[in-house]
Image 1 (cartoon, rainbow, N blue to C red):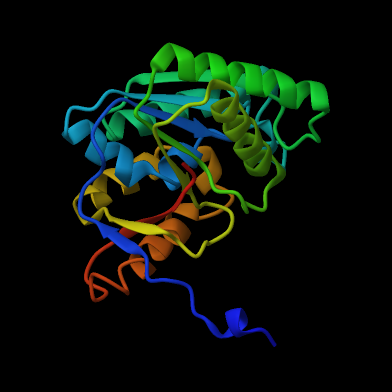
Image 2 (cartoon, helix red, strand yellow):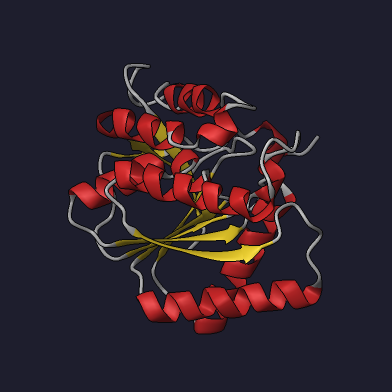
Length: 229
């Protein structure tokens, strides 16, 4: 066994507040923007930072039992996303409408990269939030690929933070979101169609509580991030 295998990962850095500036958020599905970096987004808005959210897919796979019908369900997911973002103080959101949970072709990935590059150029963000590199859901992973490809294409030099939803990470930083907790909870609870299937708000707030273990002595909540750029 190598010497490196015996070395523990470094302790994550604690952030007491978010970095200031224009913010662009990439979410794979309607609700990931709240479940992942929702606390960070509330803190940005409390500081007066402009926040724009891009939701990549239509979210139709979030109804496996077929309780809703066709395009009406897509509109419901978008309405839930808007309502949740209002709880975070965000009113700037756009929907790309890629099909949910489909195997994306190279053409889809190229189109996604083009769209991400256009959004970065349009918004000129100082901070980007995107799924971290080892998210297990294929839509999350694909969005990580297209956003990082767009950043490379543009030679973008801001700060990018990878957030966790589907898979927990070994983080580089943990942001104290204790003050944002109630707003994040309300934002997730706005997605009633998803809570009918999974109590993901319970799961994500449990993960956020766990993230307080290292620096906050278990007396608060944190969001974990990987430093992408």
